[in-house]
Length: 193
Length: 318
Image 1 (cartoon, rainbow over the protein chains, first blue to last red):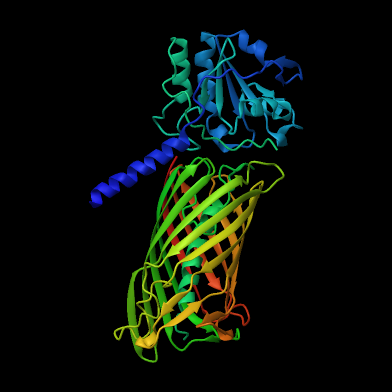
Image 2: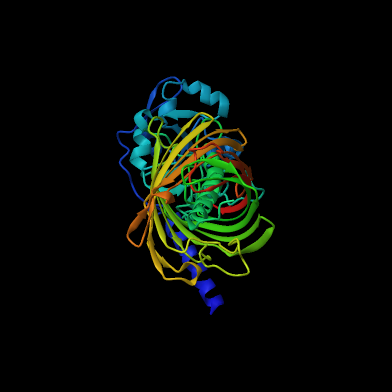
């Protein structure tokens, strides 16, 4: 009886966690026609036009103060180098309120990754992005095919992580749907207010 | 030495929860001016931080009470000694994106020595159930503080202090309140760079109960609402290890015995402490605290006063 109750309790806990961990995994096509981002030269780029130019576009939300993002910097650089030859464009987007007065070039120097400014957090709000490292993968039609984290590490990087974003990109490039289209993003909360 | 009242047992439980929670609080503010984890809760030892879905922990707690406060608030050193050693098993699980529930299962051992009488006792304490919902996380806004609501309830699974036994002349076998209670509270917290600050306040209502002290006629005892405040400030290092200071104060009005209010039964206690946390990778953390009740008259009432420490080890699942 006790063993049965224990199993029942564990199943209940697992169900609660699963319910809570489930992200928006369904493919959606958000309206990004009016979303513009600014680069280091303060040139304005339209997100929708960028998305249409590439087979896949990965929008990664960035935070200059998030240790979780900083811990993933090298993995992201490797992923960019691996995927860009396959026509996957990476956009690192800074939507946070506290960084709006700072030059983007400062972030570029820190990360060696190009950062685009999302004024007023419009894109983050449109996509309902909540965390740094949270990534949205668009196909060329503007449909979100993956929304989630880079991997299953938070700040401490394990030796054999589940590379959720990489796996999703490889699946999409092969014409398949990602196995985990809504993997959990383990970054800091984005400060949009 | 003041014989432990059922209220002091409540205070013990509340303080234990607050202390372990406090270490969780100090973890709340992450490094590099950004918060990975939200603030804390006064009633949930294993508070889940951001992204954590499940936590299980064990806490060891030891305290000694060299003095006590009289009914008028006067503090005096005791001629006897009292030591309390407690082991808690606690767990929390996330049930919503910003909601979590938890439970604490205490095992308590007590040693008292007064006037040559030596009494050892212990057993299972009162089980506590907790819940928390964060409307806004401490790190979610640049300017607005985080805000959460807290709830808790105590189940009287322990031995009440009036359950007298000839083998325990100093009631060292007391491990619980002897009644249910419910708690509601709020938590306001803010992260600013490496600094974290939080303020919690909560109200506890204990349900009336019947007791038969010494096997005599039964009495009905009801209680005033207890309020508690907990303030914490901490510094979070780049490693996410943290060190914090806290102060807590609680006060409860007089109890009512068979419909007659007894003005000598009010409770008050003020406690200060330092707490720290050391994260190990992303899934373990060691927490600890040193604390002491303020041994100054009027800072307490009808409570034993002492000092102690806690050490806890938590495993979390992301």
